[in-house]
Length: 329
Image (cartoon, rainbow, N blue to C red):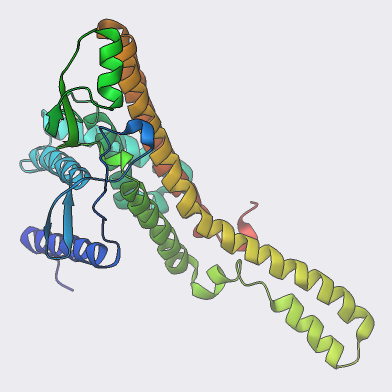
């Protein structure tokens, strides 16, 4: 089979990205929010702000931020790989350090073969989450956009007015840039990618039948029912009891597999949103230099959340490609 060239890979990547955007817009449209995030932090509104609609596709501030993250990462690795040399320089050295560190971590958990197999997806998840988190700390986020003057009923200006009497500034109601991780759609998208990747690796790694056997454990129950039909009542009753337990355990395994989507989504969304609110509060309660350490904590939190997201996906993927009878080993 002939290898695809760089242009073909880029074209396929663009086509897949556009297809996913269209599918997401058709089946998961973003509603126009009645109130905006920046002006109503206390009201618990966390909807993305749509700027305009192109057909069925909504362009929101978090979508713009996500595209910025893709451009930053794409530009970094393009500069690092366009003129690769035996002795790396500048961006090539940085890219090699990042990829090698992630590869060593993945291989240490999943082994050499599986570590390299998982690298493209898991490294992309890690870099996307951490870049989103760190970009959200830039001073252009949540402060540039559309709004109005005055202090009417907004948390931002009421806090500023309590610190600086007579303060009447500009209120940003619709921010142009907003951290993508604080839009629940982004963590949900990452959770779905993680879930589908794990299922794909599990099915292709050990086969559909062996992989599905840990969810649908009805073999013992069917054998016990067969014994009951043949008249072996005593042995059949014990088999039915343990077979029912086996079926129940398999159902729990299936539920826990699906619950990962929810846990992955809200873990990332909750931590990133809480961090953004913390920075907002500290910037007004203790402004200037006292708030600087909290930015360092948020950088650390972003790195930890990216590592947790990719690390948990790595662990689940490793378990998925391990035959059920060898999981304890």
